[in-house]
Image 1 (spheres, helix red, strand yellow):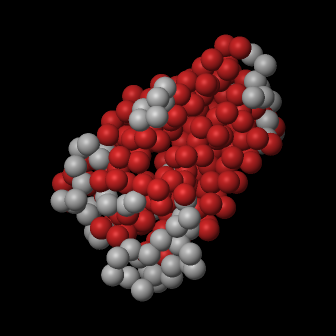
Image 2 (tube, one colour):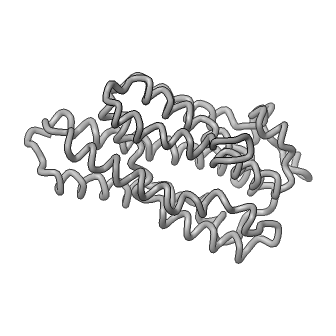
Length: 245
């Protein structure tokens, strides 16, 4: 990139990336939302996604520790509270554990993360390292996948309630909260990058950060598809659904 984009053009480029690369297009999600997965495959998805959920506040805490602006710290630390809650049974992680409980997974095993796919861990850990090591602008830009999450959340909740008898509204409570949290968070992050990305290099870095985040979300679903759908190669030590292997 050699010319500075105006803020609206930068936003347009970001939204193009989401339209092309967001993981709602992945075959695994299409199967999940259409009711084409069995209980064990849904369990595998929820178990692996727990690893991602559990690392989000760690990622956000790493960013907060680098911020020198108190106003920005106050804004960003709200994300940590959203996931960790104010009490042991509060927050997004607790609600995700309600989902894994409802799917019949042992909570202690889920929290141990022992059965998580290696590729899931590599992808999620790479995200944490990205936020720790890249510029604050890039770290904030990497959160912009939330711009596209409302659609996939609505599709997921409707599809899973309609197609899986073993899922109920209580189990999916995590997603109801995210329908308001994600738009609030993404609006703030979008305004920040539109304001602070002032040079061609900074704007390219913002675009690349969003591509990176889309890629790591896609990679997690690639791993799930490979292990639990086709060809069905579950790595040693990873979760094996009942009746498989």
